[in-house]
Image: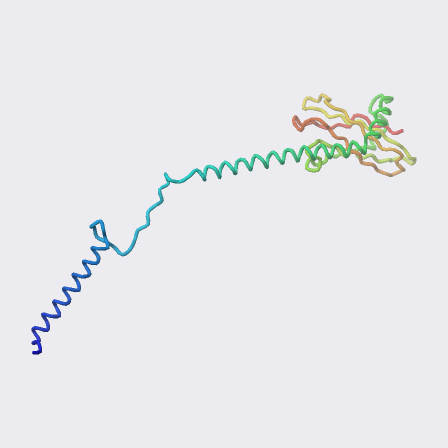
Length: 201
């Protein structure tokens, strides 16, 4: 077998390169069934939102229902707190209130002990939302004494819409008592407490 000339070897090498290129083109064309050009990278497309279910709306409805349930629970809790606070106060002061009412029925005018009584509002956060007044009674005399106090709750026009009675018994000289006068009216409209009578007996 004779050795090809340099010119022949060049022709053979060129033919081999051409065959390799043709094979590569054939393979690329086979990869693309649509007959179009094929690329090595794939471009992602946005999802078809029309095929989505209603999960987003359901989630919003669930959040709204949860918020309503929590608001209802808070309202119920506040109501329960108010009832509990009022019950505890009533249990402690019912007898004193009755005694104070009876004693003040005998009194004309503001009474003889208004200078021995002061009032301070109690934060509604600690009363379940009820209007409550701390009535501080101080025995400023040199003898043991009992006290009866009337607290009126006035509306914005100055009209008395509610009256509560508190008292303290057998306070020693210099001793203090701090009963609560609690309004049972709704939080609105806002009422103003006023010391109406205070009697030492």
